[in-house]
Length: 329
Image 1 (cartoon, rainbow, N blue to C red):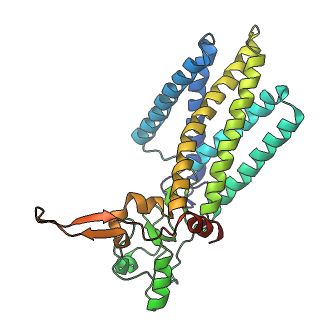
Image 2: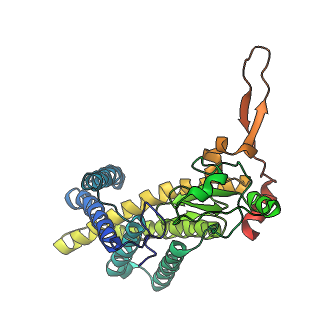
Image 3: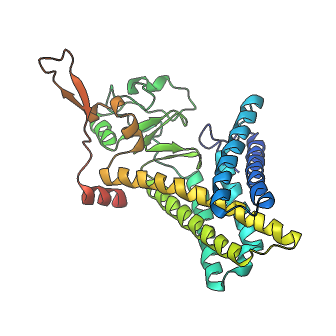
């Protein structure tokens, strides 16, 4: 399945893709199994304490998995890791939580998960706006994301989606669309925002709205899962049978994982909303010194010897115009 891209490149099609997906699934199993220990052995702890312990254990488990993979020089597939958790949570929900949830809530939650799965598979194979080899170049002398000069692009290997030089009007047109270079995909992307490891793809002009939509759906589903899990736990506080204890541990551990996801994804989404409102890309904000159009040279005062370079966003057209450009571009 070529859509499950490797975390170190776009659209990985190497023969070891299946192996990398298996490695990611094993990492996911280790993470979930580690979280399972806390509610299973310490059910008497408060929900808050279990959540804090889960955050610490999850960080240790993921760090340990990363260390082992580096030690063995094994590469995993980040999209496969995300895909594993989507399926795992769906199985836990259907087998345990759905039994205590109303039919309308079940229908809505399963529909949201189906939509998320479709959107996730779609963004894996989406074209973010790659500039093809037969496309015009950008303005000569401009810097790419990795600091390369665009006139040197033809020195890139034949596997790279390079850019050849054509007439200046087409070059200016592409430049106005803010084409940047992704060093992971080794390609120029129109409206490049960032390379998303979780989706194994660049986020650019053509899939930026899909990316934002998926973030919203992820937050909605994880918040819903947390709420429905909490309802199930409140109804099953008395745990007498071993089967009930295992179910409780599954629900509690996945609820903590889901809540952790919600917290960081809300902050992540807020960052991207802020970028949309200001009409600036993540790449441009972080590395604005690489792009001359963001530079404002402040002449030195009598007590200074050197001029100062400050930031100014030339693409900010006001909140309403920025939102309109994002939604309609």
